[in-house]
Amino acid sequence: MTIAMSNIVPAGVFKAKCLGMLEEVAQHRLEIVITKRGKPIARLVPVAEEAPVVFGRLKGSGRITGDIFSTGEAWDADA
Image (cartoon, rainbow, N blue to C red):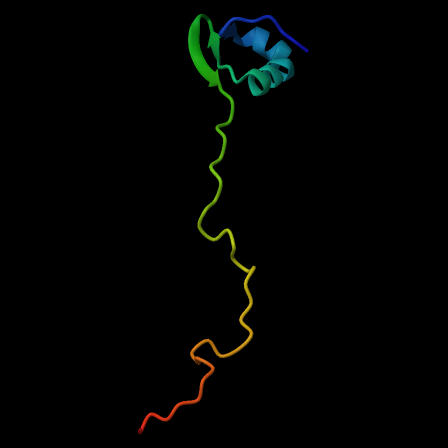
């Protein structure tokens, strides 16, 4: 559904066509300024893309299978 619109829309028009305008903003990444009596009152903008989480990404994927403080070799500390 394509709605021909400018970047400035009166509140009454927005109320009548808001679902279509939401789709247009999401698909085409455009911004719409909503006015009431000719004065801007709101701005409809697409949601920013979230950056991928880097820290903690591998949390819970590892497994400890033995003594993490041991080297696995026997040695005599007194020698």
